[in-house]
Length: 329
Length: 300
Image (cartoon, rainbow over all chains, first blue to last red; front, side, top):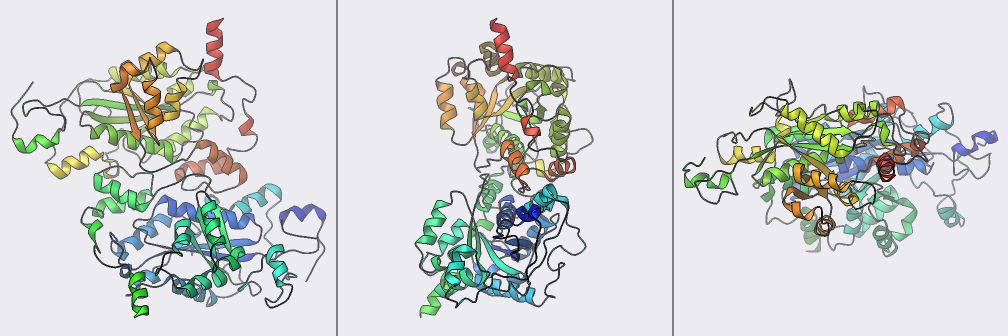
């Protein structure tokens, strides 16, 4: 379904090849899995960076961000109870209009492989009404605040009066088995799932360290890496960028899905690791302004982190490594 | 004034040489001068790091932190009106029980040399009632929140029942700055040598740095600073927090998110007024920075 558009509005969609074609934007939900022990400003920044990056391409609309704290079954050393970590995460995003917390993973008795969390989230989205502007766009009862306006929205406001991106027919869909598919792989990225039907796709939001952990023996199943990279996609926040790129280039599993992996460079070094925050808390040092005030208040009221909590799970094998060992038996 | 103390409490004051000596703690007010264009989480972190560092020595009690935004007369490129910068700074520290904003410097018609701001602040403290525990300890009407409890306070709670440090008289003002400011002492024409001397000797500096070694090397190589080495505290950041106001302004111009890099109330203020844009970044373009103007005039 093509339509003629006036020249003046051509700049609004950067990937338009001619004025008759308007590429459809894919709706994306960013899923961040982690310990969040505790959640920090860095975790929150990752969402903001990822959204700006994806929307800057003109091909995506990020409709929701989800923090999914890992369950206690992960058995990581120093990991405090999931109930606290979920509560802190909720406090952290209380004032955000687009980021929320999903506690499903944290409530499972056994540790859940990341791909299962992705599948679960995708299922949840599919079970919602398709092709509605309201889906996942705003948390219930909360209007999208100006503070959370995406960069794309702000730029539209600067360039033109507020006009929502139109949904048009997609002239760009080639079946994956088509001999021309490989050309489109470079000319214009294909959305490999759910694009034409309108429901959002879930993408894994992570740091470069997670990406590089794909190379740690026994930590990830190869078929899971394949599924994450092909079916879902990754948005990977990195400091330098070159290490992540080199890793992808050197990975037989990842390279075929290069266009589905978005490497995003931080433009402000923000090295706020939860490990260092816990260390600071144990030493009685201030961690204020490294994490949201409500989270800090929660921690202090309950004296959550100390030498004892840091020893939890000491000597216990990390769940993914346990799982791998059992598989090999 | 010495007194005998039981052995068990010796650990409380780390610098005690014998059990008969109780070193007095100096009360300190940290003063941070800057553009705060806008104020960021990094500016706020500097206060927290400085306080922890000083109190960890066991020799100091940090009673107050002051942000002093520079006046418009500074003529720095991209510097927006002082009224906005002061307001944003106030929003940033609204929820802090020990950091506050002083707008005196920002209200002066001409740019004020840093040493004058230090002298002004010290005068203000001297004019308050001396030798009172209440002086500068808490912002009026605001109880010190647990969130702002200093590391020393937290450790005392862990080790012993609360014992107030000895009164030592009025607080001294120390300049809180980044390593870049310290190293700017070497830029010709930017600082008067006698001012550097006065800052280092009369007041003292707390200098927050990433690596530490550059700052140390600079001090070692400075005839003005080296004699006052003990009055300069080099504090290493243990979390890299490179949130510069310049990059934040750049992000805002590009329409990129700067959320979680600065306090939400400050971000809200900026967005409501569309404070930063390509035009604001060109303010004072072509104008010579005030300190350099002043130096040039002095040499005429």
